[in-house]
Image (spheres, rainbow, N blue to C red):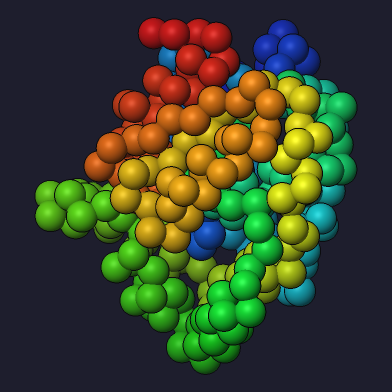
Length: 261
């Protein structure tokens, strides 16, 4: 079973359309706290599951994005949720691509954030393998040390924002094995570049202007390949734009859903 956080999951709203929030690596559904609050305030049903081994989700080694998407699909079926708007950030974006490939008939729309469609280059794959080995050996602190300096915008570090503490706390609650397994799933994902032109539902892309890991140029490239899609760049945000600039991020998502504040 997968653990999850949700709002308004009653029969009246969930059967209509639910926002499915897919979290980034190596975080948890906790990263979506601001978005869940905003959706709850608008009376919109939403669910944010945790990947294997995170929160109270069952641990699993050597899992793939396909396996995880199937597990989430089973969870939604048990909750009688048939249609979703997918909001995926970073690893969550990779999962959203896999979801569209597997269950396009269930997708009402997509919000793809700070992510990429391409497979990793040989250099990037080598870096991921090094990350996996190091985290297995040294535990979650290794992931914090490697990722914390590069995920946020410069202004976030300068302001001493509490989200850097939240980032650290979420990672430190996981085992090195859980983090390594998630990274391995990312490394073995399918290339989704050719998939972009086949996406027929409404699509919004979001990217932080200071995202070093999946920079705006990648978002711009994807947006050009998806007919009718839109792109929003968020100033003073890095790779975790939803945590750094939640009000702006939430406004974009609500606009996408057709419910402006």
